[in-house]
Image (tube, rainbow over all chains, first blue to last red; front, side, top):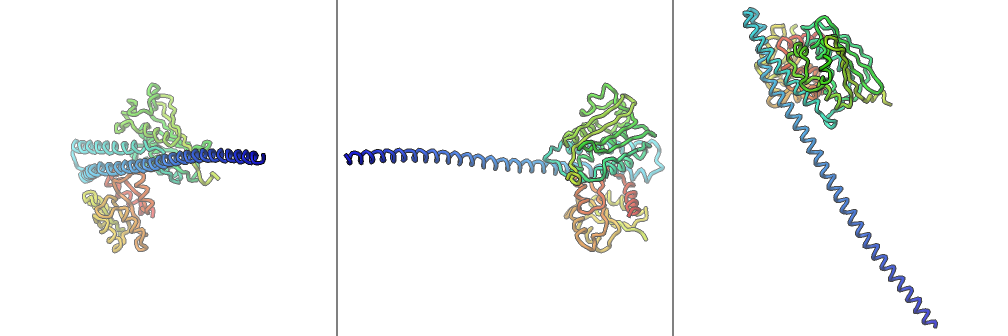
Length: 296
Length: 124
């Protein structure tokens, strides 16, 4: 009897051991399977990561190539123009006794050289304005100083016009983080436009302000205004009113489009108000900016 | 005492015009057409102002600024860049290296060069 019980116990125990062995074997198999899965997944992840690094590097290289190309191309285009422009203005300065007709001819060449140069500058601005967030630089700048510089440069550029600029600086000098090259193009375009389209003896009012967390910039002029039927397309490429073309024959109608591109790419909003033809215009934009010194 | 200006520019046409106009405006002008020659000239003659091009054969204008600003003897010599390289980042680069200003040649006229040199000396 005792033997039978012993056998039974041994049988039960061996069955249990067999069962355990089976479970262990099964678990092991599962473990190996999941290990394999983990391995393949991590392999894919590593692969993807490498690919991403690769494409980031490629993108960076591509952007660098673009920058280099634009830089070299603009330099090579400008250099011969400089020789023509400098040579002719030098010649005109030296030969004050030219017959008026001859002087007009030379002046006409100079106007065309300037037009060519203007085109190069506008195309460069256009390329810059397309910069996506990854290409933008963050510079710590006093934006009001940039506005002052642009106004000074514009006064010099339009020294033959008698337009008076009245700036109001309410934003303050604390620096902000922004791509200074881009914001400078935006200021320049709006301020130059105001000069272009404002007749002599009239005024241009410029305002900088903090609005919420945004930097606000406004240029109000007493110029030709924007005809009602042209207002919808004002920021499109190559759209200019007949009055605008009359007052600024050099432009090609990219300035406002470029400015909108820049403001959009900086995460801001651009707009304008004009009561219509001959009523002047106000162009403004808001840009969200970080002010590191006042942020904390 | 005449103020002295050194022009470093390999475009001899533009360089010579600027030189003539500045001489007529009573400046003492010297002209060289490479970066190396420019550095030597600054070390020897210590001009009151350098007008510097960026695209030069051999070492470029940025290197010239770096070298001159890096040596105690020449660090004080003011430099105005006058070049047809003029992308915003290029103008920033000149200024960060220590140039007083950066003008795009094609956007200026010869007589403006005299104005900006006059202005520089009037304000310094």
